[in-house]
Image (spheres, rainbow, N blue to C red):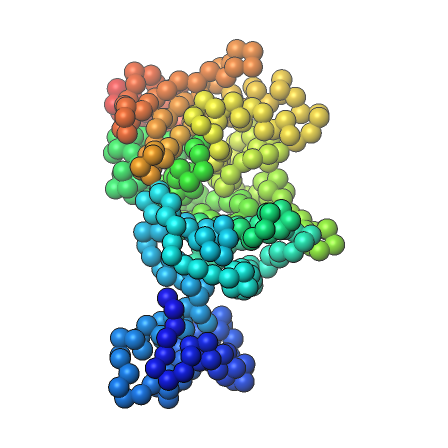
Length: 407
């Protein structure tokens, strides 16, 4: 929204408000109500009796966005249909709506982009400079921010803000979103309650975090959960949960806390469930070790199919060091992991669970045996004739596996 004013240029009005904020020692982040009052006071003094009330409301909203929100990006953050915002250059600002990209009419300048990023990073404790030219952070509203600057990018700052539009908190919510049907949802809920070790796979923006959050929502209330993430995204509403986040190195190059450190730390925190936001490297080994130690775990992994995810989980732990061999990893994956749920986003932007695969625990050479319990039939899941050998684990929590599978 561009600012116009009946009395004097908007930039002058904005500068005056900034000056008054400084004079009165008002911190916009900590004292938003005082900022609102000052803006209202300034506009009341400036506006003529003939001023259009609708125009005045627009000016007030834009000023509030500038001083309390994220300026010209705030309307996109407030729009519930927009899933992601990204800036390729100051004159190329995109949004994703319904899974599809749109080039907006918003035109910025390089200084505005830098100012917006600095404002977003203030509360995160993370930094962005030539020694750390990219950053992941969480915004106050829970959105995930990723920024890369030159010389890693060629010319302009690249900014991504990922929102979590789908507010699924329980597996049943996914039925309403069309991600899976009621029968598959009941089975997935039973797997969570039975303490199965579950991996959620899919491509970028397929809905992995949404699905993982919904699965976690069905963990019994009495169980203690510890989550490990690069930046906070899950925001679980469970009763007993501790959320851990990685930390980048200081400007001296020390003090970094990586995801592997967090996974190791969880085992000292009496977890009954460990949730790793996403495994991409050596932390997968520590997660597998935790699973084999009797702690139920869930995570996500980037993959094109459930079987690709299973294969990837046999390779990622090898990144932990030369002393970790495939002869150790493959039987560990086969014995620890129970289920892979693959979520997919199609060309129309629709997100849905495409397959659910059970790991049998058996292997042949470097191949881990798995069987499809549900497979894709268009945009719907079709139940196969296969089953899984976990009846006793379901029975311990009062559930009948055959009944859940519709056998």
